[in-house]
Length: 398
Ligand code: AMP
Ligand code: MG
Image (cartoon, rainbow, N blue to C red):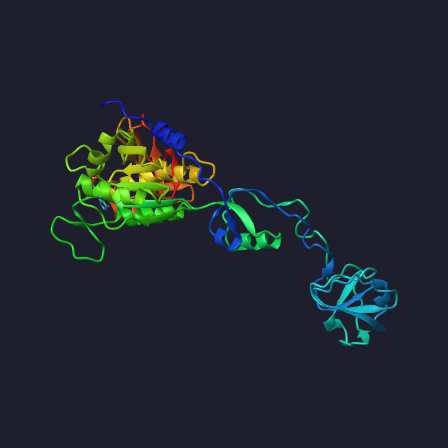
């Protein structure tokens, strides 16, 4: 067999060509869902001042040690009170949750342990020093990193950004990735199937995979036919607005291969045979004026999915400023014999369960139902053609 390009080399070439997207300053509400591109520190401690954790009375603990006691109330401290107050020995201040603790006080008696008095209060029970007080810096110290670069900004993260006073943050927007399927045999799901047709599944699957990878994946409309000009027109329409393109189909050795026919003459996408199964025909390049990365994946559904996991997902991570490399693997023991072609690394679909991995029935690259029933890819190395039951294999959990 002609020499095939090693899987690791193909990934290395892709990762060397793509760049992290440029960070931009986003208004806080617009940052939701993006990836943080800076380490965010707290400019002040949180809480910024000692304050009450409950509605009650700020006291000197020693004054209530012999409860029940009746004490005069000198102050009423609400949340937001900006006066610096003091509780003198033998006196108490009424205080609300979040209000600053007056100097001199070292405990808060919850209102439930009192008669709730306004001018004088009967305190039924003693409390220890420090009771119901939230101390300065208990949540965050001055200068602490509260979120580090690379963090995905979900709701709690947006909360802490506001909580440390940030109105704007540096983020990397989710890469926008167009998915474009080719094939004259493809019918839209939801429409009737004519003889010779199959329903188009790859663009739905790949757009979902893009979203699972943290980017913004969308279908660039219905599948295009195997006419290279139609393909080029649809591609062109996307290039000015997207950060990457994934195509499916039209890159193998036969005729009617619109992706290859359209892009190969332009010389910017390299079409190669990678030493893997499924998914041998692969293409990658940078296209358009903005050097948009394009991944031209083979059309067989399982091939396109495996190619996505091996090549596209790491590239999307790199674009998002995250660590990028081959997919993480775990070791497992096979429960059945498996075989693999010589010289190609196989990614067999399997079910991983408690350290054991069972290959699913239906290892054809068109057998999408078998992929959907699997939760792992079992890796059989290039130089191995057969693995007996009970072998140790590397597995990519899906
Ligand atoms: P191709 O890579 O275009 O030669 O396609 C290889 C096989 O995958 C053919 O059997 C196609 O019908 C099938 N195929 C290609 N694209 C899709 C798609 N988007 N959805 C489902 N099957 C596809
Ligand atoms: Mg095709």
